[in-house]
Image 1 (cartoon, rainbow, N blue to C red):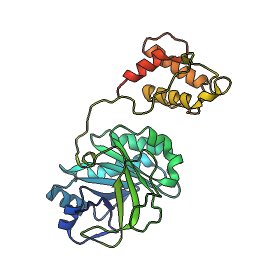
Image 2: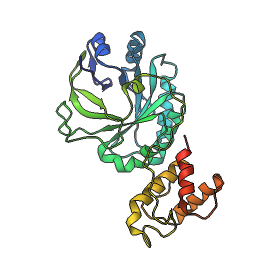
Image 3: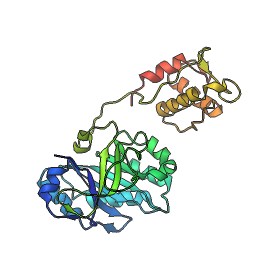
Image 4: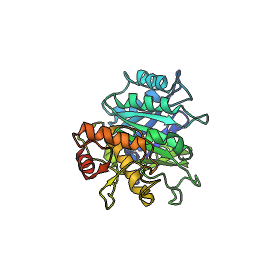
Length: 295
């Protein structure tokens, strides 16, 4: 039997919960929007999922502005309603006016520190706007992205989600057993297994850097000026240095392939933190330290 990964709200009509539960490994439903709206279907979904032991997620559609307050309204609304099979909260970041990036970051940090898993939902066309939030999302947070392509109810390889997306909404015109009308459908597309979306437990196991480690040049290190005054052919490797330093040091320097004063300053902080010779140059000792860091 095929598996279905729908997300629903009061706009969709469930006609047979037995069929829905059998076809869907987990359910995603809207809980709130803004600071006052509570979805009329929320209570029913929670009740049916808890009764039938089906994992479920709850999301808030974020209006523009006061994103943290909206996230808190989501949690306040759901805290006393959820039960054993609740997996986590989701922030739906897609309003046409655009959300405040710093506000989204604060809201995501808030829902990710409550002991549950979390997700952030963004539109394909708005990737650049929210890239900084997506790239620095918490470990227990998945990235959910919408890209429809032809939007005809089926997935087309011609319209993939961005690299790194964990969950891809590929149509708003799909169908699902036990539901009437057109339904949003999704597919698993990242490194997270289905079990990650169905198991409420959060792994506390620390992991090493998930990106690509930089290759050092023949002289054995990078220094200020590289990538734009000297060693102009090493911009790709310097970007990898910058991404790595950002991850290890929880920083946010610009990743531009230019080893400038900001990169050198961050490298200096790393050297001081880990007891290395302080010179602002990224070399084999810094690389070795970074390869051992787990978060």
